[in-house]
Length: 417
View (cartoon, helix red, strand yellow):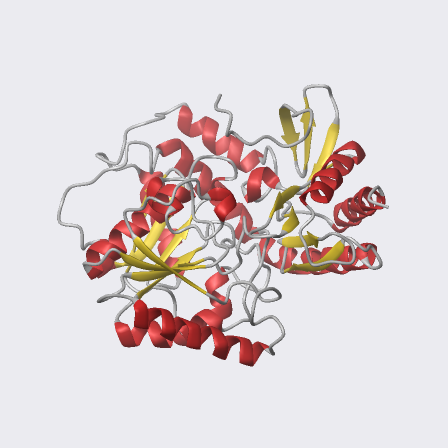
C-alpha cells in the first residue's frame, strides 16, 4: 500500500461488521459510527432491504457494463432524474464522486468549448488529475499541474477570511463583487462554476443561503454553467432540503448535478445529472465498465426507496437539530472549540489553539483518539489553517444515539484540559 494512503488512529482499526448505527472491529470492540465511512453509509449498516437486493441481484447476474441495458439502472436513473429538479434530466452512472465530477467537467468544457473553470476556495472535488486541479484545499491537491485553467472564488467559508465580519447580505454582495472581478481576469468564456453547497473535506463550511442562487444571475449573463457537487450534501442529509442546491434555488436548479456516496449505502455508485442538451453534447462514443452495474443499481434502488419511505430527510432535520444543540451545549466553555456548525446530520466542530485563531490539528487527532476509546468514531477535515471534527452518522440515527454520541464527545473534549 502507498505511503500516502491516509489511515485514522495511531493504531489503525479493522472494521469487520456493522448493524444499524454501530460497527465492530477485529478485537470485538463496538463503536457508535458518527462518520459512516465518509458519509457513505447513509441509511444504516447491514440494512436488510439493501443486503437482500444485492444478494438477489447477484444471484441473477453481477455484471454486464453499460453496453447492455439492465432494468435496475434504468429504474434508478428515472427516479434520480425525477428527484433532481433539473428539466429534461439525463443521468449517467459512474463508480465514485471523483469520477462523477470528472464527467461533469468533461461535459461542461465540451459544451462551452473552454477549459476555464471557476471553483470555490477551500473546496474538494476528488482525487483524479482533473478534479485535483479544481480542488482549493492544498492538503488534498498534490500537484499544480492541470488540464484546466482554474480561477478560485470567495464565498464558501462564512466565518473565516476577509468577509467574515460582514452580515449575510453584505457577505453575499462582497462574494458577488469578487466573482465579477475574477471573471474580468478570465480570458474568453468560462465553462462552469463547480461548488459544494456545504464543503465536506473543507470542514462542513457553507455560505449564507441564497449565495449560489445570486451567483447564478451573474453566471447566466455570461452563459456559464453551474455544477452542484452533491456528493456529500445530497439525499436529504442537510435535513431542510433533499439537495444542497435547494438552499440557493431562487434562480432555479443547477445545470449539472453530481452525486455519489450515500445513494449506494457503501456500494460504489456515483453519477451525473444534466439537462439533455448538455449531457448529449459529446460527439464520440463512451461507456462505463462498472458504472450502472446491476448489483450496485439494485442496492441504490433499495436504499433510495428505504430513505424516502421512512422520511430519513425528516429524521435528519429533527435528530440533527437536537444533535447540534447538544454539541453546542457540551462544547460551551471548551477553550479549544472555535465554532460548532452544520445543518441536519452534517456537523463540524472547529478546533483552534486556545487564545488564538490558529488551527490545532494535534487537538483534533487527540479528540479522535479519545472518542474512539469511548466507543465513538468521528471524522476530521478542514482547509487552510483549520482543523475540524466531522460528524455525519447514518440518517436513521435515533435521539438516544445522538445523546450518547454527544456525551462521549464531551468526555473526549475534556481530555484536552
